[in-house]
Each structure stands twice: as C-alpha cells, then as structure tokens.
Image (cartoon, rainbow, N blue to C red; front, side, top):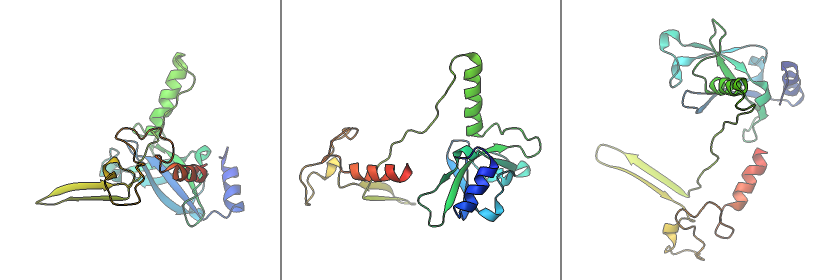
Length: 198
C-alpha cells in the first residue's frame, strides 16, 4: 500500500486511523499481533518485543527482538470497530540488525532471492491454502474421565434424515469442492467475504 514512511504518515493523518495492528509470524507460520495507538507508531522506527513469548523463538535470557514494518503490506482492517491499519513486520536482531533466521517471512524472502540467483526462477509464490469450513455448532471437551468433539452443519450429509425444511440439498462426502447452488449453501457468504476482503 505504501512505498515509504511519508506515505504511511500522510494516510494515517488523512484517514483518521486510530490504531496500527503490528503483525508477524511465529516459527510454524501462524500470524501473531499486537495493536498500538497511532501516536505510538513511527514507520521509520523499529518496535521492540519479547521473543520468548513466541513459539520457537528465543529463550528468556535473550528475548529482545526488533520488528521493522513492511509498509507495502499495509491494509485497513474492515472488521475492526476503530479504524485500524494492519501492517506485516519483519523480525530482526536488535543488536546486529540482521534478519532473524526463524522469521518465516525472512526465510521466504531469502528463498526467493536464492531462486533468482540460481536462474531457476525469478519469482516465487508462498501462501496458505485458502480453505475453511462453516459449522452451525462445534463442541469439544477433554477431562479426567471423557474426551469428545462434535461438529454439526445444516449442510452436512449426515443431516439428510433430520426433521427440518430439508429439500435434499446436502453435500455428499468429499463432494463439496465445486457444487452449484442450491447444494452449495454458502455461495452468498463466500461472495460477501470476498467483497469485504477486496
């Protein structure tokens, strides 16, 4: 979204942004975050955080880490009540300034540079598999004497015998990848999510 810190500062002021959501990945690649009021954020400055609190990062006695904003990733969060700018950050060693070897974003950046240097490819694409499920109910419990999970979805094939306004539009097992409506119960929901994220 931004090419430099001045663009980010101008946008924050012009658009009355209230918070910056600082995002970075842990070692397994799960996004982590914390939010700052815009008054505490300077896109030219590093942010410090405790790396011992993050899976696979640092021990407590060497936990100081630094975050540097990747301003090109900035996006306004459509789901937050107060106007919030989400920004992905790279992780660095605060003493040496070197990229942190366990930051998945840095690893991907190095892999892309290696591919280009070898002539194998000039571009690499890394990303999650965009797949999710919609359930009407999810329950689980683990205790000393029992353990269970239970999921339910009105669209589930196991509900063909349910007493409901059932027109037989149930997705068969392993058949939910490309069905058309009315079997595809969630076309409108996916469209709404896509429009919101665009």
